[in-house]
Amino acid sequence: MRRRRFRLGLGAAVLSLTLAFGCAWQGHVKKGDEFMAAANYDAAATEYAEALRLHPDDEEIIAKLADAQLGQIEARVQSVRAALTSGANSQAIALTAEAYKILPTHPKTIALVDEVVEVTSQRATQSAEAGQFADAMQIFDAIGNGLPSAASRVSAAKQAVTQAWVAQLSEAAATAQGAGRVGSVLMYQSKIAALSGQGIAERDAARAQVVAQLRYFVQVKTKSNDEGANTVAAALSGRQGASLLEVGSAGERPAATLTIEFGKPKFSTDKQTRQETAQYQSGTKQVPNPFYKMAQDDVLDEERRLMERENDVTKQERYVDQYTADVAREGDTPGTTTGAEQNLSNARSRLEANRRSLEDQRNTLMRAKEKAASTAQTTEEAVYSTHSYTVTTHKLTVTVQAKAKLDHADGRPGSTMDQPLSASAQDDTHPAQNIAGVAEDPLSLPGKHELAAELYMQAAPTVGQLVAASFADYRAGLLAQANAATDPGEKLELLLRYVIVDPQYADARIVADVLTISGVPDVAALLLAQ
Image (cartoon, rainbow, N blue to C red; front, side, top):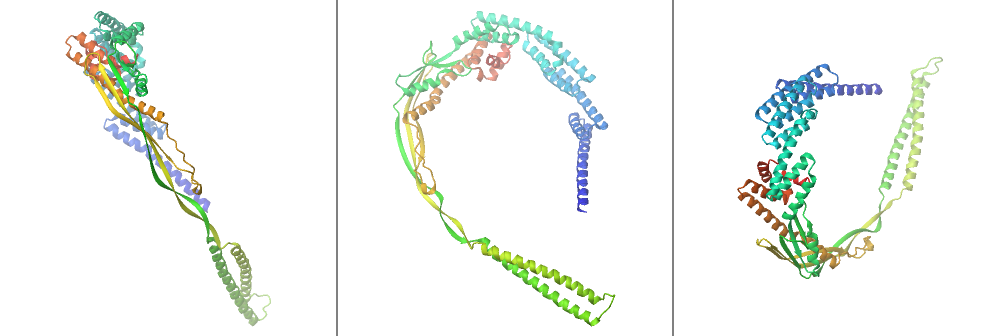
């Protein structure tokens, strides 16, 4: 019977799961219908697709999903045409790409792709004819990235625009070269190389010319025996990232000179002590054994059960005596079993069973007594103690007076630094505490020379702030000159110099101004890509 009930429960569980999945896909269909009624085709398609996943091959769901996807296409057709009307070419291409992912072979999708490619490619050509090459290339790139299947249809037009732009850039580079505007030459040659893959040598030559003119070299001077100053100078030396800021001990025409001087390091030591504690086992003690008490309780329980069994036997013996007397009073009844005889037989059977149970209980009681006799009355328990010991903290500190002075070759005000710098190291120590099992902690502090060297390395960023401030002021000067310039060619050159000396940190507004004047977009990224 139990097995049968288990099978019924399993069937109910399977039925519950089936109903749950059924409700799930039906719920998605219901939500899809609601979204369709609200013309929210994207949400409807999502719900129908999930319903179809849970309930595959359902023709009704397949049909609903197809209707929703068609609605998605039609909605995008309207959005694309609105984008084309407003001149949002990239948006139109992106929406068309979404439609292509939904139903790539549907006639409406194919017609939309044809329409968008035709309109936007014509606009790209018109932009190029108006000299707006960046806008034209943006459209062609959007088509190639968003609609790869249509890329070949605009490849010839794109190539023609590329060639025209390269020709225009080459002419602009030659003009800039004649005017000695090295930053403009580098930008034009970099864009030519990026567009055509040609003119790499010309671009690199332009970069070398720019570096020669715009490198911001800071020369560092130190005394040969000043370890701290020499360490800081070595840490600061080299080209600073993608910028034209360079720090070194020797070079031609430094834009600024940095003099570093460190005083003699002074060391001090300090000790402080504190108390620590550790727990350890100091011995054992005898405590009452809980298992002995349990064994004694078991004996008492078994003795109680023995008395119950003895009472049962005595009771059945009285019944046997009573029913024996009843049978004797009835006399012989040959061939017939009387009620008294039946009662006597049953009483004798119960008496025999009770006597067996009594014997078993006597054996059980004997085993309980044996177990109690073999169980120890007490047990050993660990005793813990607290050990106190002294920990000494040793601290080594180094202090040095650091001086730095930066002078500019162009007469700008210099800057100085004169401040104490310090570094310290500390370590705890204590002898072994054998009684508590605590190992020795020996002293481990860096040497004085090692600590001083660490301090010098920490000082490098502090001194480097003078160099960073000087370079930032130099860039700000370039930007101020650009803002004051009235000639477009001169303004472009100064803006480019601002970008070129550190393209990684170029203001986005300046990059936009460069685009407005030159037609070259993303000049900072262009220069960083080299």
